[in-house]
Every structure is written in C-alpha cells, then in structure tokens.
Length: 393
Image (spheres, rainbow, N blue to C red):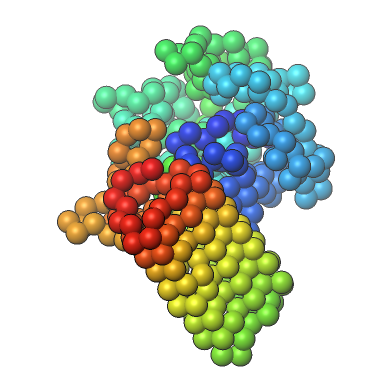
C-alpha cells in the first residue's frame, strides 16, 4: 500500500499563519500537522509515503528526508495548484497498483486508517450535523453508491472525510472535468471508482480537517491530550506542575510557575518566574513566557515573547511575535455568542464561545494593548501603547 499525502496548497483559509509557513508544517503538539498524518499512515501499515508538495514544499522535504520511521518517502511537485485530482496526477508515475490518498492537513486515528486500508477500495466517512456543507455519501448497506457535493437535501449525514483507497485503475481517470473554479477534484475520480467497483465506507470515530485558525487550536487540544507526562527540563523546585505536562530537555521553568496540563514546553523555551499556563497549551521552541503572564488554551509558536504582565487566552500566536507588557486578549463576547473570525474576507463563526486572537509572524504590540475576541493581525503589524484593537489589520 502506497500512501499519497496531499500537501501542496497555500492554506489561504488559515491566513495569516500560512504567510511564511506551509499549512501542513504548522505546529500541532510535538510535530508539524502533516507529520501526524504521516505517522498515522505508517502505524496503519503503509509501505511508502508520497508527498505532493507545492507552496514552500522544500520545508516539507527537508523535514522528512528520504525515509520516515523506516518507511521510504518520495516527493512530487504540483507546479500549478489546479485541484486535488491534478495533485494526484503528479504522483501517478510512481504509483503502482492500489494506493491510499490522505490530506496532509487532516488528523486521523491510526486504527481507523488501518480499517480503511484493509477495506479497499474504500472511502472514509464521518457523521456530521450539517451534511449540506460537505460531500455526502449515499450508501446501500456497507457500500457507497454515490457522492453528492454540498446537496440541499442530503441523502445521509455521512460526510466524505477525504481519505481513500483507490484501485490502480483509478489512475486512468484523473483527467476529470474542471469545476467552475478551474480545478479538477478527486471527488470526481471517486465517483468513477464508485461506478466501476464495490466501494466500502469506513466510519471514523474521530477526525479533524484543519483549515482555519481555530481548527489548528482544536488540533493541538486533541494531540496535547495524548502526550504522557515527562518533565525533563530545568524545573524550579518551587514550580507547581500538575497533569500531563511535558517539559522537554533544554526548556526552563522558573520559580513560582504553575502549569496545569495538558501542556508542552519545548526545548529552548523559558517560562516564568510566576507565570501560569493552563488548558491545552503549546509553548514552542525558543518561546519566552515571563513574569506574571497567564496563557490559557493557546498555541504560541517558536521564538515568540510574552514577557510581562499579559493574558493570552484561546489564541494562536505566530513566530517571532513580541507582546509588550500588559498586552491583554479578550476571548469572550458580552452576548455569549460564538466568536467570529475573518476567513478570506468573510466573517465566519468559530463555533466557540471562547476564542481570542490570531496573530501572524513578527507582530509587535505596544504596552497595554487590548484585543477584542476574533481579531486577526497580519504579519509585521504593530500597535501603539495603550491601543484598543477591535478590527483586523
């Protein structure tokens, strides 16, 4: 079983976090997002990995090299981002026989992928409350007999979870018609396979499509809870650490710090003195969390500084961010409605009562800056001292 991992896109829905980093390489607990996908495929029994790369693909190639956990790795480049079927076509020359296809920005459980691999040909499915927003599978017993993209009147609540095992013959059907957006979609290939083969569906108990900033937060909430406690760094005797907390070698936790897991403090990071980490929180490589700072249920990416008297809740901070003393993030609306965030120019509900800010790389805030919930800052944005920020920049 060869597994193709689609990882070429620009990640426009997760902007500004993807401005300088391919979305599949954004951090999720102790690995980049796409490594969780690759690890699940390897644990499920794949024989080789084929990455389809594009935007900043060299970063993915440098991370995985020629082998991952003893499994051979190959790369193909999608020069023009013309849809998922087109991405698969770039890999066709190195595929032989049946093969699996996974999205490099999705999280899967290894046991579920093993069931998918064993069921071949097959498609992964997940039950959803609002199937009209997805590709919906029509089934007859355990077989898939059709797929309908975003139907007004869905036949089932089984949504296509974007994981497939195709027969080798599917490689003959990649030249599908373009959509109105000028893309060739893998779901049209799936439809051809359904017409010609008996296709099983494998229902997933847990799955996550990481397309937008709050979904990156959800991915970290999932994977941080899977870590087992391991306090190996330089931790003060007066620090209080409870729950499943990982402090990696080379990380420093100073006096008076309280960490309530699940949390991960990575090599080169420093926390404290007198700081408070709680909820599912990632403190990435080289991050500095200083005196009297509270960080709750957030992702703080590498080399960011939150050094004095600040509060960050339910937020995602990019790389090399510097929050001035007294910077505070609001994460709840007064009307208790779900927080909205701008995605590709449109305000979209996060579905979360609590969500803070999304901060791009190299942002700097002046002292005593305050943020409304759902604000997004583009890379290299700055704020003035004592500024109240209620709109995206």
